[in-house]
Image 1: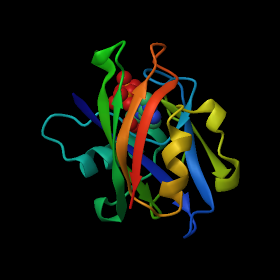
Image 2: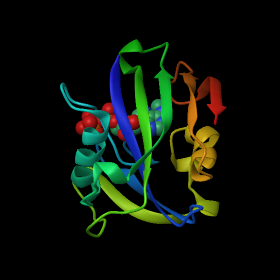
Image 3: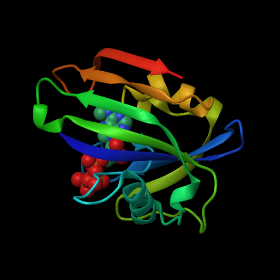
Length: 157
Ligand SMILES: CNc1ncnc2c1ncn2[C@@H]1O[C@H](COP(=O)(O)OP(=O)(O)OP(=O)(O)O)[C@@H](O)[C@H]1O
């Protein structure tokens, strides 16, 4: 199964604003999401997270500034080739201004105003806990349309 990263740039502690990107291409296009993608062979999850942040929104992050927030498994029974896991991070320090790239159009949102209806259906189950500073761990099983959540188990720390 492939592994991915997903990083949420935030302002405030506790989080007040979050940077999300409208994905313009590939898996999840048309949805807002954090920034991330596939971990390449030989790459550590944190190195992949740093690389994807530059590629997708042009910000430079130090690996030491990534806060690990847990791991989720996404299962697609109708299309098992889509199965993957995700290593979650938040980051509060970076260099550069987020900007639009070929893959993503970034935008800031108040944490009270996250556009869950335009995001992956699982996000509303775990993102509020992560934004409160809790680590999460769990599995999400998607329905046959590969969009709706059929079953979900999230443990918070
Ligand atoms: C199913 N429910 C989901 N809920 C929340 N986030 C999800 C997700 N499914 C995938 N993600 C994230 O979306 C990014 C794109 O990943 P993915 O397209 O595979 O990678 P990458 O950008 O390298 O490849 P493309 O160039 O787009 O093919 C990556 O951060 C991944 O963790």
